[in-house]
Image (tube, rainbow, N blue to C red; front, top):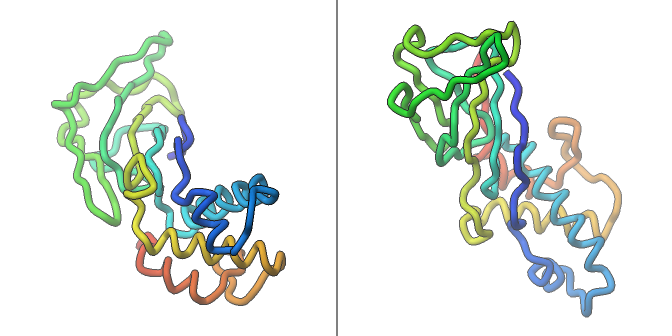
Length: 191
């Protein structure tokens, strides 16, 4: 199982003006730097929580059908398409009537009640393509405030200190406040 980003988020959860005010910056002399910090902070928060903050298109690639498949990077709002690649190079689209999307806050599962009723992939690997939309919404207003606050704290740390500090989480050193803000949103896998 592999997941690929087909389209990047159209906006970031924080605007330059918000971050500049937080950092007490005047003018736009640091705008390029701050915008790179905004993107890096979003990516860090998404990686630490295994979630997508702003809507984007993702593709999950499977080798074979499973009755239930957990879609990475929740929240998931919609399946765009499911295609099965055949041995002759053509593809078959799985109709929406053949699957159900079970949407939850911590995970979204794709349920295919009868895998025998859908086409089998003709390739040994990567023959099933599931395209979907993941994220809290298409605007910054849709992103929960805890994520934005964590991003703001990270950006402030990076701008002011430009060195690593405090608690290691997945190899990344985080301020305790950031770790505490993100903890309830982390997705954990059992087993």
